[in-house]
Image 1 (spheres, helix red, strand yellow):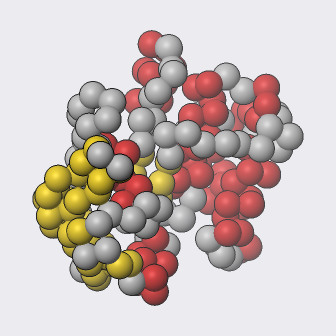
Image 2 (tube, rainbow, N blue to C red; image 1 turned 30 degrees about the horizontal axis):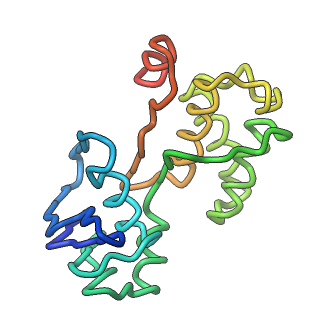
Amino acid sequence: MMRIENLVKVYKDVRALDGLNLEVKPGQVYGFLGPNGAGKSTTILSTLGLIFPQEGRIELFGEEVFRDGRFDENQLVEAKKRVGYMPEHATLWDFLTPEQTLDIIADAFKIPKTEKGKRINELLELVGLKEARNRKVGKFSKGMRQRLLLAQALINDPELLILDEPMTGLDPTGIAEFKE
């Protein structure tokens, strides 16, 4: 599903990734643990083509998307259609409702109108926002916002789900709710 070989990323004088090797197979749950600056987010951003490593190889779903400083844009675009991503720092549209937000994201993924409403309802139920579906996101707690971001990451029914610091800033109750 995801294979990384000898990945190197250098920021000025800091070697954030130094020959990283990683393989995640279908059905596996994999977590990165480490202090700030350990390269967790750099690995994620590199895998998604959001930053450019200097060396190495990245394969998603059996297709090579990166090799030695160059992304294969066509392969990367196709692979990203099968990935759900919840970034560490994400902005939500405070003037929209969760339902409106997910509708926009579903359109971006070209989810057919015949399936879109059902998918949005399922996700709002799954993340516990069904009762808040018509409230403005600007009124949401941090925990509710995180759950909406998770729903966004799941909208395309991804084969690979990548969550970057999904519980940052949550209180103990929010962490328990998010894990649930």
